[in-house]
Each structure stands twice: as structure tokens, then as C-alpha cells.
Length: 195
Image 1 (cartoon, one colour):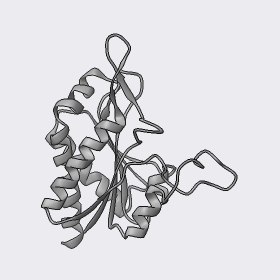
Image 2 (tube, rainbow, N blue to C red; image 1 turned 135 degrees about the horizontal axis):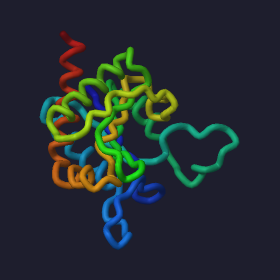
Image 3 (cartoon, helix red, strand yellow; image 1 turned 60 degrees about the horizontal axis):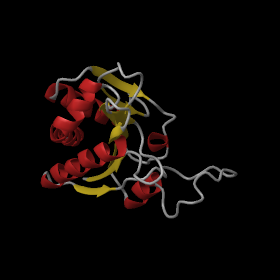
Image 4 (tube, rainbow, N blue to C red; image 1 turned 180 degrees about the vertical axis):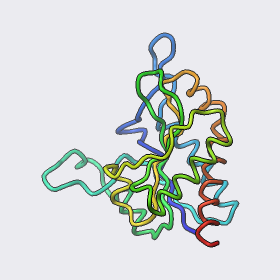
């Protein structure tokens, strides 16, 4: 089984959502959390016999004609790389952000009534069962580039709200638990399609 892992955002162009300390300084960035979790997921999945490819970039899909936002980025986009590599599963890992009061975990898919929806439910269930986090459920988000331009079952995992103090503590103190839960969700899904 070939699993493509996409830790969200990147360190150069778009670090994603952030958590601020009491003095208003950034003390935690989404790109860093996502990369730590993604790297650990890769380790666990490889130990389970999966072949993994990890790519962190905010250059997600081919740029529509006439747009030059990404002219400074060279090479294959995340979705093109996953498709060309022949991934069986695509997992993008993120941290959510809202008002500072929202909490919880959700997994997004193109359609709930699909293999991607099944994969999303497997990952959501493992995270909720493993961690003390609010269950925000599986959500359809067909407009997300990583879900729309991938050829394989794909999900985007919103692990927790980085701008909420309680969720931020979960991201810092339980990143390995989150990674293991994501990996177990993937292996649960793989087992379900072969049974």
C-alpha cells in the first residue's frame, strides 16, 4: 500500500495557522506541528509495511491559467506528485483555527459516500477514541484542492485547533498519539477494503 503524506503548508511561503503566547508572539506554527506529526505517521506506517512518500509544500495543484501567484515555485505540485507516484491513499495533515474558542478534530473528504469518506471515518474514529478531543465529525469539502485533484482516496485531517489553548496543549503534548491514531486509521481502512 502506497501512502502519500502531505503535512500542511510550508516554512517558506505559508506557515498556516499559529498560536500566540501571552505577549502576542507566535509560539507554535501549523507547518511545524504538521511536519512533526506527518513524519511520525510515516514511521508508523512504514513499520506496518506501507510504502510512504512525505511532501510538505503549499503548492498544492496546477495553477489555473492566468494566475501568477505561484510563479516563484518550481517543480511538481503536491497533487501532481501524489498522482504520478501512484499513491493508493493521500493524507494531508493540518491544524484548524477559528476564534480561539473552537476545539476538536475533524477529517475532511471529497464525498462521504466514497472510499475517501470511509478513510476519513477510520481516521476520525481512531483520533477520537485515542485522545480527549471534541468530535467534529467527517465533513465533505469537495472544494479543497488536495481532495479535488488527487486520483486516489484522499483526506485532510484537521488534528486540533492551534489557536485554542487546550487544543494547542494537545498538539504539543500528544503529537505522537495523534500520529499513531492517524496511522491506525489508515491501516483500519486498508484492512476494511481487503475484507
